[in-house]
Structure formats: structure tokens, C-alpha cells
Image (cartoon, rainbow, N blue to C red; front, side, top):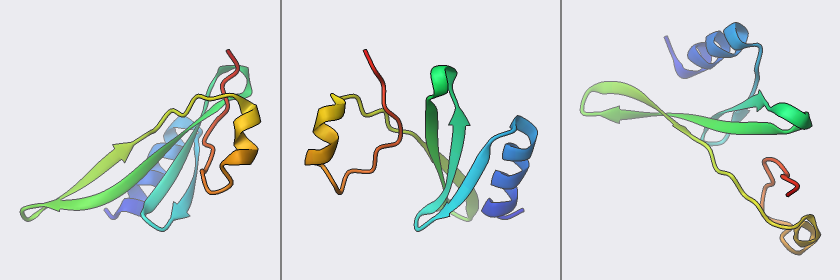
Length: 80
């Protein structure tokens, strides 16, 4: 099973969505209050074993700063 097939299987089971990315696959997980969490799935080798690394980053700062950071990809906005 390749990475795309694994991500599709997980997303189908959980009702999530995914999109291809330059580094792997981005899995979008709905959260309460209309928010969402983005998790990146990327494959790598540990010796001869194929593995998958899942990473997620939470970025919290005032929405007014969004315009100041055009190259920063906002995964979700959290209102305190």
C-alpha cells in the first residue's frame, strides 16, 4: 500500500478530506466551531522499512497579523 492509498483509506473511514502536497498528503480534520486541523502525512525510510510521519502545527496569533505574513500558510484560526 502506498502513501496515497493509506491516506485515502484513513480519510474514507473517518470522513476526512485530503489533498496532495509537495511533501506528501495534507489531511484535513474538522474540529468544533467550524475550525479544522491540517495534518501532513509524509513517507520516509527507516533502514529498509517504509514508514509514515504525521505532523501538525498549531499557529495561534491575532488575525490582524495575517496580512503581515503573506507567505505563512494559515492552517486554522483560533479566536481566544
